[in-house]
Length: 301
Image 1: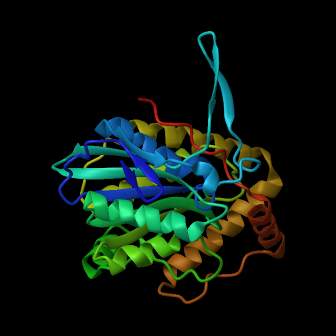
Image 2: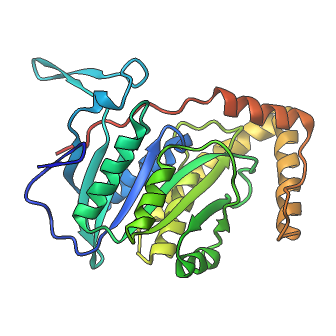
Image 3: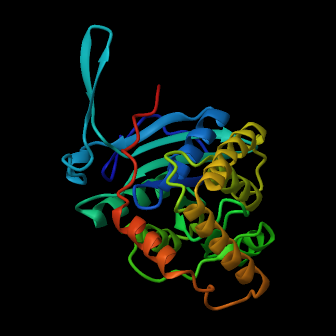
């Protein structure tokens, strides 16, 4: 079955007003946090394939998102970058999980197809998750920001310790999906975690577990996070060792700690406290250079 630009597996599952959770690469997936969060939910909830773009080359430049060549037994096969959609039922409700690659072209068509798929599946709530580099020290709880069209979701965010997003600036074309979803009566929210820019972790488990914890509280679902917390503590414990061995890095972390504690003590504050010029330059350089992780592999059958 074709729904917009998506080829959908038939028959459509009866999900009864599901929640759609979308992770977007590469724009807001530093440390692979959004991608890992979806993979965790897919495994925990037993998600099954539902849809993918029928002609991904209409949206993607394959010199930027490269196809992958691999062997299956004696055969050589190629996987082409795509947007992958899976579905599941868990904890008394339906879920749609989307690994989205940001389109290089025909962005409006991509967004319209995604929202058309939401409508066809009867989606009641759309949640964008992800991560970005921020001026946060690894020695403090990470900062999670969010927004929503619904007052009750904003209240849940506040109770979960999520700060209301005040971001203004460049964004992704998928921001239009939020607007179009709202126009169709679909609730919309976003949850983004700031991860330490100086750490440059390929897989940031602390960002992952704190994002999942906030997601569980806001969406009122129970998630088994004990093993992830252990991995996060081990990983950030290694960062402690690096900081102790590097006086320059130690000074940066102390600077971030002071700014973090000052901002926390003075909330609500319109502007964060200033950082040292050297640290500001480091953060700006990281933001300019970062291009994101490789696109997701196809979900296993």
